[in-house]
Image 1 (cartoon, rainbow over the protein chains, first blue to last red):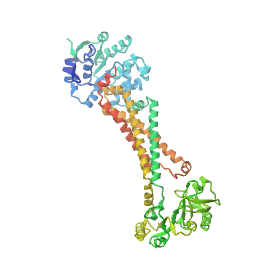
Image 2: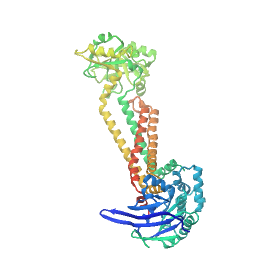
Image 3: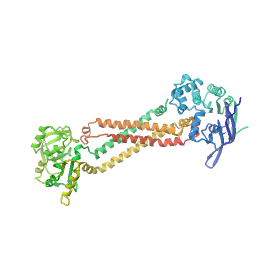
Image 4: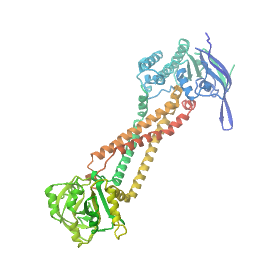
Length: 226
Length: 381
């Protein structure tokens, strides 16, 4: 079932300048992403898929065009507003997990919650719920180095969902995982999209991973392929 | 977990580097406090409450120039002058070929206790000294250092005047801010110098602090345009002019302190830069998670500040404990009487540490602030 779009992109372009040369990472991209959708973004290296993901997530700015997420044009927000917006609306999952090595699984998941006006008991409850959702409640006291890659990525997903964001952006989330762990991670993302109503946008090279999404779009040389 | 807890975890992630950085800050701050202690010792000799009533009168040309004893009658008549004694550095050496090991000062013994009431000496010993002009009293520190006892005899050879004096130790004194000197009879020196009619200075005590400016003014005027013009000044002013001779040492100590600070800033800044560079990707992740520039700046500043504060606690606190606990005259072989770490010095060290914490984190904090999330994220994969 398709809902109203949560992400509305219109005529989005991103041009990088290298000396005299101009490289168009995104070229007049227009796109709608529905609430609760699990969108797979595919394309060769340099096609602009990560750039598009970063603009939607509010960590990069376009050269032109607009990107509304939940009715807010993220390209209009200043640095400080964007930081707050990301904290409340976006969950990030990266290829190399990017957990803080000196913090336990619990503390890593708690990290984005420290920026919110929550008591420690409220934070504890949210962290425990997130860790239970990814099946790692018993690993809360483990450091990243004491866990497998698949477990680390599940902790990263727990961190991404701890603040209850509307949007989860995943950049090659299965790129560093074996197939069993990748399947687990993809199933969790599917559950988040299908059952929890989160909008998941995933960049991947892997057609098998992309097939877990509800829709797949392809980018090439900064343009959306029909 | 709390934000301070997160800062501590980050600081502790490379324990060896943290230890070495804290130690380098601690050693530098210990050295800085030590230099301040030395500078104070050179520039602000310890004084007591009676110093406010004491006046030093010396030859206007220089401290080394003598003044005639006949001035005494004129100065004694100045209203407000309570006590007066001639005073001269004898420059005595117990070993003719050696150096001067302690101060040997010729004065009028009957005036000593009135001029320096804080001096303590057994009554019998003091009486014995007053009665025997060939005797002396020795400061307790010097007596302990060289093993002098009451009744000991030795020869003092002057390094300044062409004479030598046979001495008997009549007593041991203590209680002054500098218990290292030897006091002898000025009259004994006069005889050895064939009643030369000279002295080095006059030391006076005035009846009250209010009359001091007037006394000083009258004494200076009394000898104006004479062959032996004098400069009368308060003890504090005299010490200040005496200290001006240490100008070179002040500059040297000031320069060393400056270099210590510079090195300290560079070492800490280097440590913080390395610590932040190693964590650049993590800081990008934090930014992505919603940490603002000022949050990240606060994290880096807190770590840098903590490092500097720990260094200050160990370095400046260690200096305080070290100098408070040490037997200064013995440890410095009598060169210094007191080496005191004042609250002002500790405050200065704390201020330096705070500045250090801020300055050393500026460059890495600016680099993190300028870093875009995508730039940081691109370095990840």
